[in-house]
Picture (cartoon, rainbow, N blue to C red):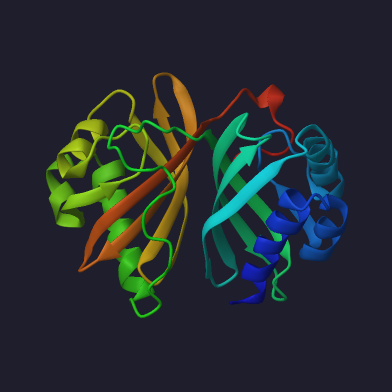
Length: 255
């Protein structure tokens, strides 16, 4: 496990789950901490202004890091949160950029409610967790990049089967099971148009994209996490968050 990966896990588990936000933010961030999470200001001061009250009003915090992997200086992390005995349940996907020593410099995320009854019947955070480090990371990322460009951005839905397995396991709460379910959703108003790919990172058989789509009159920040086997996407998770008005941002924005 790389130092950057260790630091990401630690800021989550020590700073948020463990409640020691002050110690964690100073130990695990670098010379700057540029923040893109809604409502959180830049720097250690912004982190503390949000998370110290968060810890105080949520004394019971069950936080599980479900998946986490590193690609150079980039770290992807997904977590499940249950607060105050299940009073609120959330799924988060996070992207971190780190310095040469593995200290965190920048953070992006989306936060979505945990939904029990998904369209596919699969758990939002279920499925494969462990990265197959024997898989070719570059090949995995290439499949996901071409799927994103050709199918999501160019709207070539006739090419979905070139990139996606017929029996894809679907964890996105709004998408029905299998290739047919994904095809129907991509053609719906709810899917809208995929306007921007901001970042693609991957490790082994997993790859993640963070970008923006526009649907039903709203800009939406969205993480898509994919698992690839035999050259096709076999598992998919999605976490999306509406982008609010500029006046409500606590920082420079989601991207």
